[in-house]
Length: 403
Ligand code: PLP
Image (cartoon, rainbow, N blue to C red):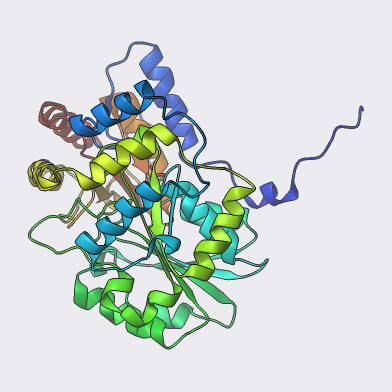
């Protein structure tokens, strides 16, 4: 056989994405013209705020279409600085701020900047698929700490303490969380930062991307804010994707200690380069313009949550508790396992259940196996109320047909 050039061996540490099977089936059914209600999507259904659109268009028209400094313009960093002061009581001078093409690349740069091969990274589960993916990509070991439903899918201080070893380099926190919506209040977060205070070798990565989507009067807090003594080893990551519904503009940002920010800038300068000049201008407008709509949008998500949670709980074999943030529900589907569909096939896993819902009910959800705590399915309620009502009807019908 002809010899071929090899691929990087690090890729052997990955399994193919556990959600790709369901995603490709969804696309195929849609192409065939099937009416699918997509509850698998991880982005808000709102539009970019009009003032940000205008700023972006004006940036193009006025020729602000060239390279910028790798980590963002000074104006961008000033806007981020003001945001951290205004919303999070965090004082990051501009040298301690970095902007990139989304929170996702920033998380990757941070992980790459701190990990040596074999270093352990504590990840509370269920977790966003990319957190362990990035850790593995950069040679680290993902150490999963299960956060069961009975504990609100939240990391418990004693479990965190137990997971820490001499090899622990980093802990990843994500509140409000994907896929569960679990959101830590100040006391819960303080109990965790108290544990971390005792371990000065550990970096803390706070993924705050769902900051503005919190409900029931809960006040969003972030680790470096509740425990200022962790400021020197915490990276606070955020962006405009979710709160401002600007996923396609690709702007994320972070504040952190100078050492880490400098290391990330070094990684960035030799890999991704600067985020889009046009998007930076739109992001500055979004971050410094009127902010009142953020609360209105959170209230709209809350109305949808308040509809869908009871609807799920009235569906045979399914249950979920109302999450405090984000726009995801992590629905317990243990009750469907071992049951049979009308065509005789048995549902043995969350993936089987997701496939059944897709094929029989035309509702796309993501199986929990992707998020490292099963048997659950993740459902996004960032769709119209009419679609949610129809999805609830279809779920009820499909689940009542299981024997
Ligand atoms: N962090 C979490 C937990 C997410 O769910 C997502 C997107 O789904 C991101 C980060 C990525 O954000 P961005 O669009 O800014 O790259």
